Length: 468
Image: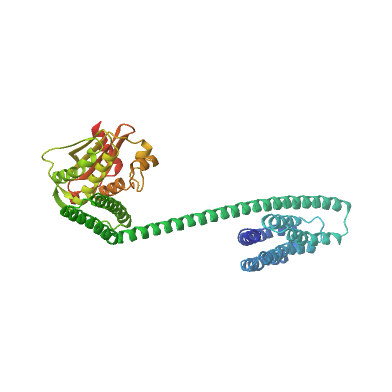
């Protein structure tokens, strides 16, 4: 409520200043001096006296303008404006006193001052009444001192009626203007409050987002820096388990071989999981480097397929690899391409039973750049469009039942996708629930010679359009 009152008072103060400055500069001085011409007709005997009175408006107007612009509050401004209006009305009243006539036409000057003083200024109620008094009280006091005839009384009744109507209209205008001002200020303050609330909420959201990003960055940086500390003891466990297996075989002691193999398998599984978590953390922390070198692509594909063939065929799947003899070499990050192939083939073998897993390698020219295309196709469980849309998100699998049935962290595809993006390519997906999936790896043959990277939409359009 206090803010509302301060806002209303401040707006009235600014309007009071504007009105005084406008009347002083554009209305009072011209009107007072122009009306000196009718003085020559109605009061030729007071021509120079009236001219002197009218010229008093000049210092009065400038003094009022100077004072109101330095007023510190609405009350001071209204006192200055009241004195200003009284001075203007006093000049007209003195002219009428000097003429001493009841039917003097100079009362119209009072009407004009009333219209300007009451209609333009944003008075409070008590000041509105005070303005009416200082304008018309001297006039009616002057009339009461005259010996009025019957015709004078009729004339003055008409004038009083006209003055009363004018004041009433101005009072109604002032009332509705005050109402509109209050409604406008109320709406403005409500809007300002709402904007401030939303801005505060946005700032809170931004702070929360920044804190979450900082926490995520800190987590990723910590895990990335812990790579050596986590991998070293696991490698030691795996190495000792393999060594103990060899010693047991050499000594002919087969009692602990089965348990040692379980330790070895569990350690390697845990190492794979930690490697995935550390890789995605390094990617998020921006600490994953790319090592570009020239390598034999056929050799890499053959090596990965040899390693994964037993895993894929374990679920009674058929496994085949197709590529031309001149597939040639590639200049990219060999280690990351191996991991991408490993992840996709592991995925295909895991989600396919009594089916077929196929790898097709080909080349494709896009925008005068040579690309390597590797299709990993299976006829496994497939995915719905909703599942396909989130399959590359970290720690995400198709749905919860998939995680329960097949296990995994949901990081393999996310890492493969990020690696492909780092190497200037992408991984596209075609899948149909109950029929199977095809993951299409698109990579430039020469990483350093890639002029323009294609966004995902452009690449999908080119690849799938060629198939149709």
